[in-house]
Length: 556
Image (cartoon, rainbow, N blue to C red; front, side, top):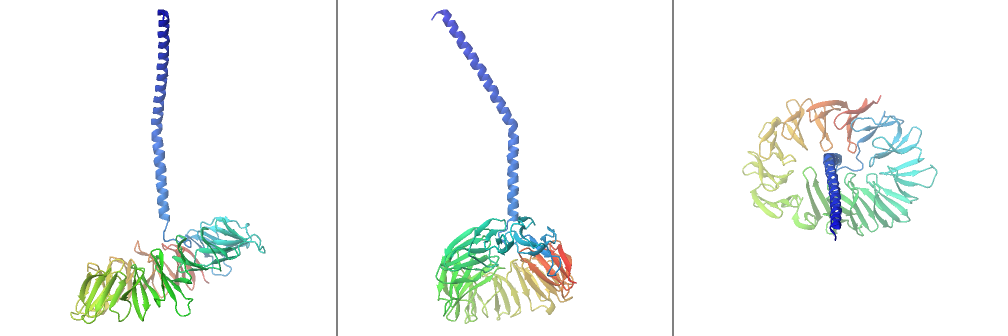
């Protein structure tokens, strides 16, 4: 290559290199601009994500606050109230806090199920509204609407033989079906879609099961807890809160629910169809155990206030404790039995000859004490008398001595309640001052009352001095005291009314320790919409759970 060509080549290479540098410079500048742009927008993006997270958390908290595991589809925050007690009275929809949502415009109303109810207006037209008073199925859509616990049978013309089954939101479930089977307190419905073919639905419209055969039988043991559907091949136990199947138990026995605990964790099943004797089974821990003819009867002994549950089997003229799935040899709940049973894990064995009582916890001996008589079950404890030293004792179910009364062979020691307190009637005190309230440590919380009774978190204490009753808290302090004859408690003792006279009541605002309002008549509490009705001779008054007056009308 000549020197001239070499020079040109170097010049060309230099130009290319310069172009590369320019391009690289442009690229670097672009990257820097992009980085600056990202830096500018990064705080905005972070803020947006943060706001979204905060909103999500707030929505989740609101959802948790509004969700209630104890709520059923029958529970609602709305209530229909009449303008008067005339048979022609119209109804308005109220929120259960007192807010009126509609005018008095309905001549007929149904019960709310899953937030919907059927109504009829003054023109005789039917509709379905939600718990906010909003129309979900319009007046002009159907000529006739008939309610079935959350389902609605609708016809487009009154004489029309064709019919549909819909939900409160208008969703269609079935058409041209043969029949429906239901119970007014059970949130389930069986639809005969074809001859002897049934589909079982929950009140929310979920299809839970299908079966063939004769018409099933649906029954609610308790609207708030459990129902069952019995069909040809077995029994379905149904959870009224979760709207689900607890178990599909295949059996030839015609079982129904005999009894159940408050949380439905234990259910006693009974078949009454036998000629000679009934048959029993127990649902527990997700399975069913059949006892056939082994037990003449099975009894569920349950006290929801202290969470006490146990099962007994009656046979051979005695009653035996059922432990797990087995009938034990422990004779329980019998007057002349040597055992006193608190539950299947806690019991006392009494030796009448030696005058000794031995505590057992889960079949293990936990101590022996002197006792003149067999101990008595007393809430979460045992009441024991010893005539030799003239003392009465209260022991816990684990055998711990909690309290004793001196110089007496009788008295009352009401066992540990849910507040871990003991109501004591001390016969050593004057007749009008014999009752006192003590805690688990034996410390006196309240005394010198003529009578004390427990109602969940509260106590009523009667004073013999002025023949009135005071309301005490779990620490024995007076919440209110006045010219009260007694107290009435509703909604698991969350709502309190004081009886001022023979038929006059005052709402007690427990939080603020004061009366709110008075009304005369009989008190009725509606657990599904959490309202109180006081029906008197002159007027009827409706109250919200917080004591606010919702509505009233004269009976004159």
